[in-house]
Structures are given as C-alpha cells and as structure tokens.
Length: 141
Image 1 (cartoon, rainbow, N blue to C red):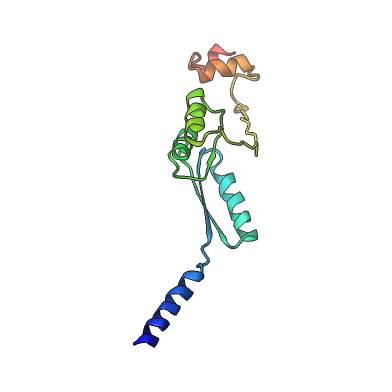
Image 2 (tube, helix red, strand yellow):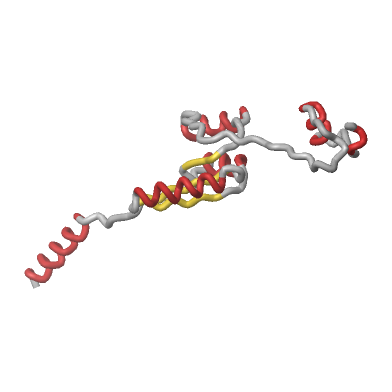
C-alpha cells in the first residue's frame, strides 16, 4: 500500500512538472477594409511561425475597438483615427492608449464612362456627388 501511494504521488508530481505545448493564439478584429490584407499577413506569419494560430475577423473599426476594450481580442485593426472617447476607454482599461503601426494607406480611384458627357471631375464636384448635392450629370457639364 505504501509503495502504491508513493507511486501515485510520484506520478502526480511528474504530471505537474510537464507543461503541455500549447500553440500561441492571437485574435485580430476590426476594419473591414483591412480584412483581406490582415488575413494575408496572418497566413504568411503562421507559415513562418508554425506554433502560432491567428484568427482574423472584420466587423469594422468600432467593433474592433470595442472588443479590444472588453479584452476579447489581442489586436484591433483600424482604418481611421480613434475617436476621443475610444482613446479614453482604452486608456482607462489598459492604463495606456497602446501602440499603433501604419501598415497601409488606401485610396479611391474615380473612373467616368467615356460616353458620359462629363469629361472632368474636380474634387469639389466629387464632394457634391458623394454628399448627394448633385443628382444628375447635367449639373456638372
């Protein structure tokens, strides 16, 4: 009986001394416009680091910041500057506003059909179109 107890105690101590190898898990959430880029970067990172699993989700910058503040994710992708209240919430939760890295810039290209009577669009014209102040091409000719 004594040897059985010693054996069980030995097995218990031995099992506690080994830590299972757990893969590192990183969860990223945020900007939909950065989703594809973030997924591609995550795939390449995981190829170089087989012990790391990265899960990438969209949902928008605001959703990513909310998840970061609530501690649900590790990294938030944002395609805009943080709003003052978001910065304040991050500072209150983490004690810091954290770090940010610029990984890309996006741009918008505007093409007009060659049969359109408008041959030139100024920034002011584009602003009027996107603000719905212009509703017909004839207003720009």
